Length: 221
Ligand code: DX5
Ligand code: ZN
Image (cartoon, rainbow, N blue to C red; front, top):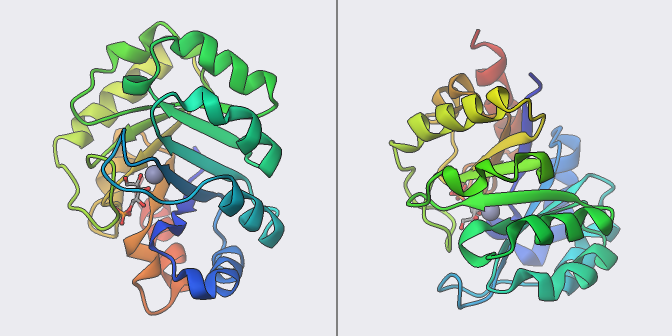
């Protein structure tokens, strides 16, 4: 399984965004993760279409857009048009998940579904064939820099088994509190895509931190 490191620009210094994204690229980041928050689904407000466009101009890496918003379908067209490569929606905000995932694929994007810590994996079981990515949240969404929830490791293991059992090739992404001290357990449990905000952007050397996170996985048999 390939390790994919996805820096979350939520923790970047927006005044130096171009420079910090360039460092992520030269440090070997596989994906750039963008956290869109609406102040309703989660308490915080971040950014939307304009930021996706801006980042699209700064890099050719895939852009993984994590939509922490109610009624996410209202933004599918504009985010796809702005250059998103993948759109991930929360099951808790998506009553018609199967149709919504289908629409994301129709727009040419990878379709992702995210589950909060309190949400059962049963919420995605019936749509695994519609999924390109399953995001298991390892904190309650809304803010960067929160503490990792230890019980998530077991959930990631169950998510891995669910995808394998149903023959899904979807990526298994984890998001929240991913750092040097948590990544090994998550990788062992079967995650392959690691979002990291604070761990990367608060590090003195972004590039070294990306390499270190990847190396921990590669050294773990
Ligand atoms: C949290 C966001 C995350 C956040 C992760 O709601 O979805 O992507 O940026 O930040 P860290 O890695 O700092 O926990
Ligand atoms: Zn995120």
